[in-house]
Image (cartoon, rainbow, N blue to C red):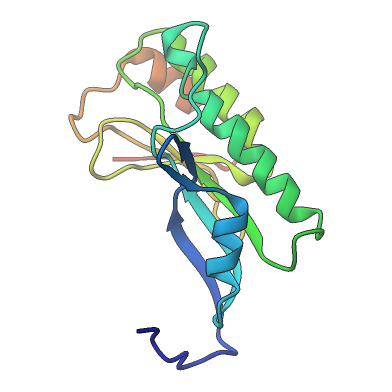
Amino acid sequence: MPEAILEPDLPICDPHHHLWDFPNSRYLLPELLADAQSGHMVESTVFVECGSFYRAGGPEPMKFVGETEFVGGVAAMAASGRYGPVMACEGIVGRADLLGGAAVGAVLESHVRAGGSRASATPAPTIPVPTFAPATPIRRPASMAWPSSGKASPDWRRWACRSRPGSTIRS
């Protein structure tokens, strides 16, 4: 039984959703938009990584970037206006292994490039990897936190210290 829409004029950013396409289960832009346009005023969404659309080949640390590349494309589709007013995937939360040594800087930079203005580094409180969260609509500076293990690689710390202007490291 559907719930009543209590405040249909309240603008909403859905802060956590996933996209996937598995043999017996699919949730992509059409399904997301159907949910987002079902009565509430969802204006934007934040994609959170879910292990779908990783790269099939290439270096192991870079495979996570495939998901950000895919979601960046979905975000561009939504931003075109062709699919309605919802700014789907306006923020992107991706994944990287902080214990990956020297490769972690390249992985983080690849996520930021793939996500464009939608990605910036921010803490992941429950998993020992950095995540990439929205530069918009939340409009906060890029930031990073130590992994929950407290043992970030020196390479990750170097990357964090030279990241974009306004970046901070939270511990």
